[in-house]
Image 1 (cartoon, rainbow, N blue to C red):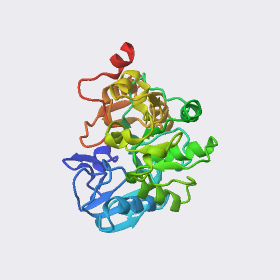
Image 2: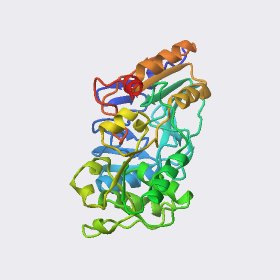
Image 3: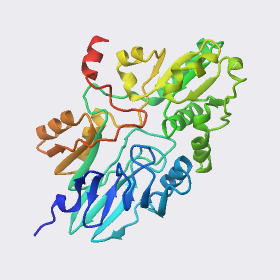
Image 4: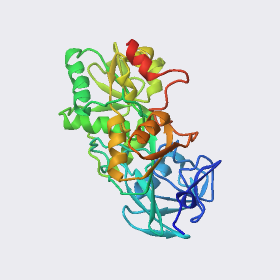
Length: 352
């Protein structure tokens, strides 16, 4: 009898579970054995027994949660096949953040690929996405609506540099998620010729130092001290998104508030958040790349974990690809989370 996809992966209250290997993928609760796609908190949680992940993801988890984030840890070098129970697994680059990976699960000629979060756009801070041909492709849909078509990130970074040139007396405060997005913005700034210090909120410091240890060139990135803020005319400062609107940011000289996120594609959301300089920089695939990736894998079946699931499922149906939404809860909290309930990005864009 041919191997069924449901034999390889099924849903439990903890999330995706492989009964033949007795492991979960990115579980939302502590489990005995977890395979982790990447280090964002909505996919990589502390408290598991054994964690299998790329070396970089394990180091990221140790920085975020402490060295005792799990009982035992095991490195998964990219491309190396490992036997776990009655299945074979291997990890492949996902292009999302440093160490991010897709996880392929195989048995008797059947292959499922759990992509985690991924993007196809270039990123100087991590390995590019690698297409893994498969029978079943399990994808996110954070930006799974046709309205989401991300522009070239270099043009967005140029907007930031040009604004600093235009307003040299003002500090530019850029909200960016502390893992991945912040370091990508820094690296892109360096590639576009910004050779001055890039100042960091304290929450950015440890992960940025980890990126530097991993060989990512980010240049001088001093932490902002309380007494420094009023002196940073014409500086670029990176901070968590929540900090661009709190008292911390108001101590800078006439600050320009910026926010690096795929959601900045919707102008109404930028206005809602009080963002003066929206930067459409996303670490997720946009609509064209989600569709392209599904076709590239050659998958006959697609499962959509979270995001704008219905639109992508419908698109698959128009291409003769079987698809279903999984409605997984607990994902989407990596700085580009879902819009507020009841808000339709298509309506917001139309009214913008």
